[in-house]
Length: 258
Image 1: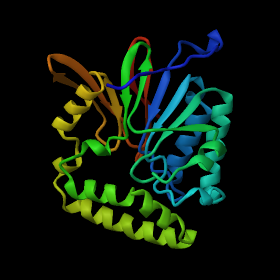
Image 2: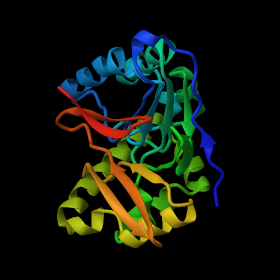
Image 3: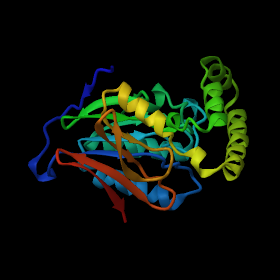
Image 4: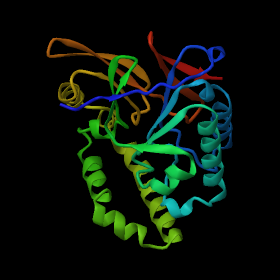
């Protein structure tokens, strides 16, 4: 059984309204998607600053080749926007996704954020809540789970980061193209969460509320596990537009960014 981390509150002005925590994931930011980038930057300059905390639950970037790529103009613009948002209001927390699991300490320091583990438990307005990226719940996709374990092996990461940055980016691009091709031949059910895996997570972590991304299938689900009703929120991706899950003492609700 895990020990829940308590969501920390800090003083804020009454004019900013009730305390709330925002959750986003699967932005897949890259220089070739200017409209979504604009929406994200406006979100950080606007609504996000009213949050007590902002949690980014994986795949902030389309890919991340290593923290030695901080000076890339596009990467630097995202980092600067996150740092400005964090200094202006919310505590920013970033979880690794399947596309940006190489984010590390230099990135976190540059954007004034905290890297959090997957899964990450917290007490969210007195409701035990578990945060995940979500890819580990897709256990029916055995090829992906084998690939995930392979590329995240510490020795593999060390060897990869020892390569020149340009070579790393070339390898990532090859893997991205292969991944997109692979998705087209897979049955959609393989790329969704496995019910048994979800129930096991609820059971292991004390029947919490679960918030995750990865599947790009935004919804609220109820699971009946061992006689208990558990709530699962799936976050939306940011391919066409932006959205976030807003949670406060009354509960959670998705908010579309127009």
